[in-house]
Length: 424
Length: 126
Image (tube, rainbow over the protein chains, first blue to last red):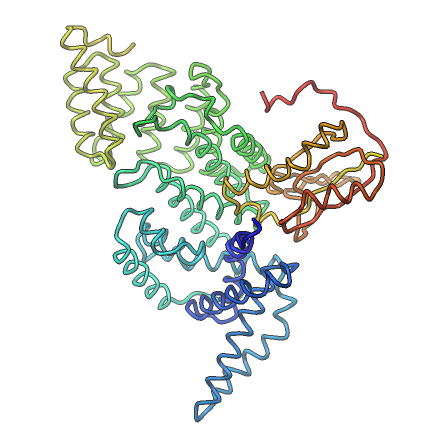
C-alpha cells in the first residue's frame, strides 16, 4: 500500500461519477473519456506529491474538464476561424459547474452514463461489455477474458456498440421523475444481466465468473447509494448478495456443480448474507413489492436454512406464486414447480411443468427439471429421454457433466432393476 | 480515559477494495490493535455495514423513518474502536497508526458513559 495502489482504487471508485459529470459537460462520450484519461494521468503525478484531494471525484472532473478546454483553446488558436460559439457555451457552463458537483447531480450523471450503455438496439451481451468498458473502466483484455473471446473480437464488438450508442440521441437535461424511473429500470435490468452472466455463464468452460458478479455488485451498490429509497434497487442488491454468498460452495474442487441441497453451508459468506437479509427487510417495509424484491426474498429463505431440510418450501412456493403474478414467465413457473415438488410431491409438479414444453423447448433447465421429476416418479425411460435432451442443450461443460451424473445413476438403478429407488 | 476512535472513510472507495486489499488493511490495523489488546487497553471493535443498509429514525411529533445514513457526507462512519488511553496524545497516536497509508480520517471522541455488552456473543458470529 506504500505503492500507488490507493490511487488506482480511488480512480476506479471515482470513475463512474467523474465520467458521468464530464459526459454531461461535453455531451460526447469520446471527449468525456479522453478528459477523464487526462485527469487520471495528472492524478498519478500530482497525488503522490500533494496527497489525495478531499474530494477525488470533484478533482478529477474539474481537472479533466480544464485540460480538455485548454486543448480545445489551443487547437482553436491554430485554426483560421475559432469556433467562438463552442467556447462561449463552455465558458457559461464553467461558472456553475463547481456548485453542481453535488450528489444529486452525480445521481443523474451516473444513471445517464449507464443508461447509454443499455441502449435497446444493442444485444444484452454488448450492453454488458460496453458498461464494463465505459463505466467500470475494465480493459478490453479483461473483458475479453471474462467473455472468453479473443481480444480483437471484443475490441470490435465494443467499438461497434460504441458507434451505435454515439449515434443515438440521449437527453442531457435533468430527467423528470418518470424518465428517471424508466432509466433506473433499464439500468437495473442490465446489472441483473451482468450478474447472471457471471452467476451461470452462457457459454464456455467456466460455469461461474466471479469478476462479473463482483462488478455487477459494485455497480448496484453505487446505484443503491445514489437512490437509497428505491425498494427494487435494495431488492436487486440483496438478491446479488444472497446469491453471491453461496459462490464458494457452488462448485467442488473438480469444478463440478454442487446443488443447493448438497452444498457445504459453512462455506457461505455470512457477512454477505447478513447484508442481503437487512436489505430485503428494509425493502419490504416500503410495501411496494417488485420482481427483484421477491427473488431476493426467495434467496433469503434459502440463506436462512442452516440445513437443506430446514428450508421453508411452502414459503418459497408462495413467493414464486407472487413472482408469477408480478412477472409471468414460463421460467418462473418452472421454478415454482420445483418448490411444488417439495411441498406437494413430484406428480403435482410434473402437472405444472408439462404445459411449459412448448415455450421452453430450447431451455436446458426445463429438461433437467422434468427429468428429475420423472426419475422421482420411477419413470426412468422418459427421464432418460429428458436428460439426453438437456445434455444437448447444456451451455457449459459443468452443466452437461451434472446431467450425466443423473443419467449414470439411472443406468445403475435400471441395471439393478429398481428404477424407482432413484427418488431416495 | 476511554476514547472512541470513529473511522470516517469514503464508502465508494472502500467498496472498490478487492478482498485481498481488504484483508491487507485489516492485517495492517491488527499491528496496532494487537499490542493494545495485549496491554488490556482495547475495547470492542465494530465494523458497520454500508450506509445503504442503514435506516434513520428522526424524532419529532411523528417519528420519521427514512432509508440511508443519518447525514449525506463525503465520508461515512464505517466503524469504530474503543481504546483505553492515559492521554489524548496516546489516543491520537493510535489513530495515526490505524490510518497509516490510508485515505479518510478518524474522529477521537472521549467517552462519557460506557456499559459493557449484555449479549454473550452476537448471533451472527456463531
